[in-house]
Length: 374
Ligand SMILES: Cc1cc2nc3c(=O)[nH]c(=O)nc-3n(C[C@H](O)[C@H](O)[C@H](O)COP(=O)(O)OP(=O)(O)OC[C@H]3O[C@@H](n4cnc5c(N)ncnc54)[C@H](O)[C@@H]3O)c2cc1C
Image 1 (cartoon, rainbow, N blue to C red):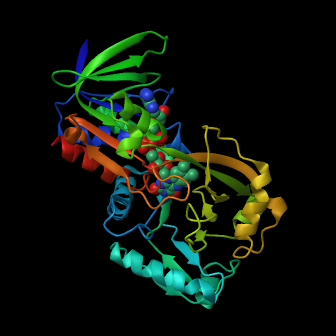
Image 2: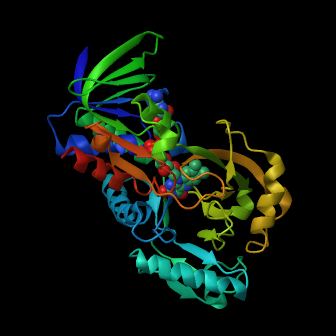
Image 3: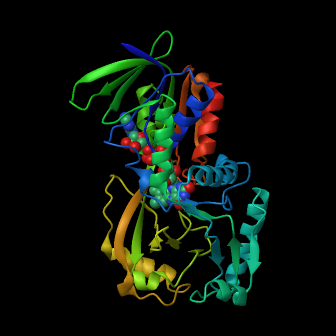
């Protein structure tokens, strides 16, 4: 049986970032990334809004807050130094009427508690000067929110990981994990359908929507550990190019308590398209089709702040699925990033529930993983 120092399960943005960070710090370590698909980032990492979040919304002291705030700065620096397309578009969180202003006030305070100190209050006129086609009673402006080309980001991470000697093995699905006297036996399915195994000292579970099942392969009961994933789908609708130019920045409604996500918002892509979404619907299967029947809900959610849109403008675009740890109606759950020595599994690092802002936080999550290995 072949032996490596580290096996990473999953070549999404987090698994790739972890491979780069580990090989940067421990240059003699052998690292293998086992990924079941034909290439990197074919699940959640390529089905998201590509927003570099500022860290406004998450409860203070949570990993989501701290890793997002830190990850935001790291990601801009990394993209700038690596020539990865990204843009500080800025984001407006609009008050639809005066009654939304207390929600924005609460957000302002939450953001400050998280270390996001650059938010600005804009009155109606100032909003119009930035976004003449948006309607509001004022807004919070976040200058450090932006967008990134997630494919370019992953492509660069994969390149750096390989350059440092890491081996991404695509079409290699992990099917079993067994603790050994020292380290772990990782059984996987080869592209030709045969089975093999390798041995590792460190096992990093970055399996996204399947992270609870990968943890279960080690004998962890996901329900008991609080690791069970509740998939929650987010659909997007696109807007015709002619109208996309009427919005320049990211435009969000206030995130109200009854919403599972941040509310249907408008995101500009780097190539100038405008997309609406995502919604948030708990699902039982990983079906990425967009239900055209949801267009009316999207339109209802956005028409008040972007009144130039018509229902007939909305075209189904794509969907992603969040690996949520909180089930429907349950309270906030943070990212799980845990070295499982306490469960008798030294060398196992589980990353579970890495939903938004996981793209923003990928470099910080990777650093946490490498620190456990240190
Ligand atoms: C609708 C939506 C919008 C979002 N918007 C944003 C945003 O704007 N900004 C932001 O910061 N974040 C956003 N996110 C969150 C972000 O996309 C994720 O946090 C991030 O992509 C998670 O990356 P990952 O590497 O952990 O998981 P993934 O990208 O899901 O990668 C996991 C990988 O593990 C592989 N795998 C699973 N099981 C096995 C196995 N047994 N063997 C081998 N391989 C396996 C999978 O094939 C997959 O490639 C959004 C998410 C969604 C769904």
